[in-house]
Amino acid sequence: MVLNNALAQSHKYVEKAVKPGDIVIDATAGKGRDTLFLAKLVGGKGCVYAFDIQKKSIELTSELLQSKGLANTTLLNESHDRMHEFVKPGVSCVMFNLGYLPGTDHSVQTKGATTVSAVKKAMHLLKKNGIITLVIYQGGDTGFEERDSVIEFCNSIDQKLFAVMKTSFINQKNNPPILICIEKL
Ligand SMILES: C[S@@+](CC[C@H](N)C(=O)[O-])C[C@H]1O[C@@H](n2cnc3c(N)ncnc32)[C@H](O)[C@@H]1O
Image 1 (cartoon, rainbow, N blue to C red):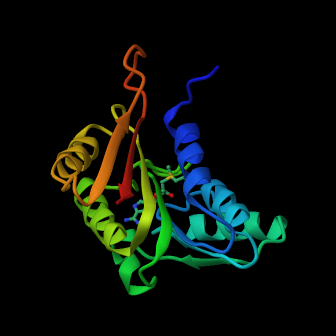
Image 2: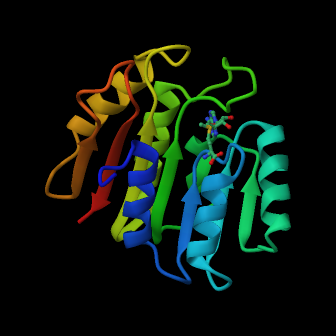
């Protein structure tokens, strides 16, 4: 298939934006799959900062990185809306894979207000042509509040400063995930 789902397409954009040696952020570490993807892209001279509010997620991500012999990641058991307290400006990518961690309590999930606050912090940290990717789930246990908050905020971003693109399959049933990508101009 030529067309990618939201998560796979986010990886395509990130592969274009991130170079070896870059500093990048995984805003939602979860089981560490996106953190691992970023850690491989930036390599030994780069650095990944990965955030998650669940201790279990930090443990799972740490185990995954160790099993792959990667030591270029700083894991932070903190909310992503505090990322500016831990990371200096100049990052090439911030990935958000929103929602809840499958197999855990679905009520521990990202929330519209916190996510929008974190995206604003991420926009300040981006370098020129750096990107933010947001994979947004909707419906089911996730609902629509976060999707609506994020889209409302993204609609208001100054087009002279950032390019913002929204992608989704429009003919799929059951509310497929949406990808939003924000690039600093
Ligand atoms: C869909 S999962 C992420 C999947 C992950 N990227 C992976 O590759 O496995 C969403 C994660 O966001 C985390 N989360 C929820 N609210 C958060 C917040 N305010 N700051 C950081 N992480 C948060 C959840 O604990 C959950 O692990």
